[in-house]
Image 1: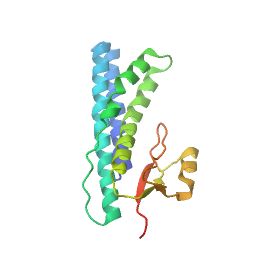
Image 2: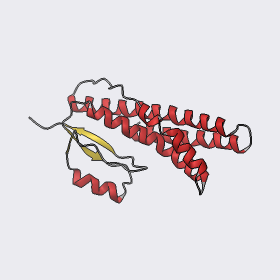
Image 3: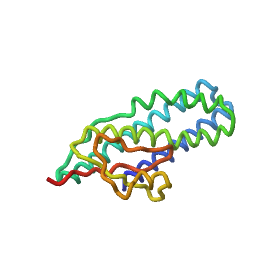
Image 4: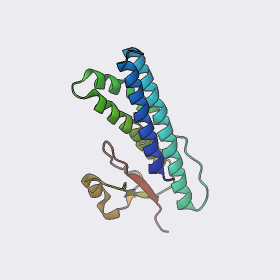
Length: 175
């Protein structure tokens, strides 16, 4: 199972749980503060799961790169968790389709946590650079950022956008 497959399962599971919590709120089983607390917990747990998956994915990449088993870096999604409540309140208090916005938040919050953790783990690695590994159906912006497989220095963070599933494939310069 690939990192992207694991991450997509986490994202879909998060969306499903968030929609279930929204349904409980809509049916009056829980009030707004309870919904917000439950939704924040759902996003927080999924963010941590996604961060662990990203950390392990970097460990696997480093193991491939170095020819020996590499330990994970122990990165987390703690700094992303601080934004979840603000995002939830913005969705509930804003205009437009709340259901669609909650679904999008359920899909994107764990993805952003994974991207952040992946970048943190890459920054701690002994790799010298990375190339953009695009998802199965890359958008025009990601194809442009790919730059025909250009190798970027490790200190150059990989640009992403909302919903972006691309990852950095680590490389080392030949000696």
